[in-house]
Image (cartoon, rainbow, N blue to C red):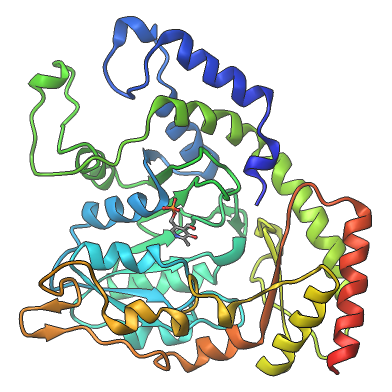
Length: 398
Ligand SMILES: Cc1ncc(COP(=O)(O)O)c(C=O)c1O
């Protein structure tokens, strides 16, 4: 998770530039800012880097999902298809919009299984959220085609895969829009932050207004602007935009180093009996933030991880991960909410119900899967030690 590993002089220079002008707000202050709009520049550069026409910077990756859903008009009565392996934000945003998350299975790509999406699409489906988990592309060509054929907008939650591609095309540009996160552990980090990219001008304008209390951003002075509808505050501030500009420049270098480190680990593990790597539909477009592999069964995955941990090379066993794995989202299954009326699970007479065993295929793949996060500062010695630990751990659990 490299962004923070490379914080340095470039970020410092950018931040000082903002402070020297004394303008933290992304809008207004024309005189003081002397022509410099950090957030605007960042969103334009980030969108262009990924091959999209429009970019809207927001306060987080979760906000990006909220803003994208609002931009698409998703709300109560609507259903949104979401994978059972993702960070909770992907479905929290749907619940918070008053819509209903419909969970779908993943396959050995650790992303949505295109074969099983269709059966989740019904008359109330208003969007599919495809998440490019752990930095690697989903089978996004197939998924985008399916959504087009069904007339359902596709949101690519690209929070974990900034800079990733599929067959040379930027992730986040296959569907109606792509959302990104720049939180403190992401490849490009602004501490907190997010972005929505799209080629759809109407969606961009609606999202832009919604993310700023409905302001239409006409050049008449902020207090005189009009509004078409209500919104909220999901704005990014200039300090974050400045950090984003410095970090975006480093993205190609970060991906290069990450890919080298991942390749070294993968090569080292290649001969291990019973170990099978995660299927990555286009390895050239993988951002390489994780190396993931499957053991023959969940028991052996757990045992291998214990043996790895003993050797200082513990992995993530997703089946036990309470933030990313459907079977572990006990608050979702319980319908737990701080809202006294029981919303968003209880809506009038309707009550949303999810059970931990609703997604057996997802549980199967997550049970067998172990992942190592890939960093930028992984000396050769550390890589060698991890590979040795894996060979010893695998031998121990055979
Ligand atoms: C897949 C996914 N979507 C959305 C988010 C939310 O991003 P943020 O933490 O910036 O709100 C994350 C954060 O980890 C994520 O991994």
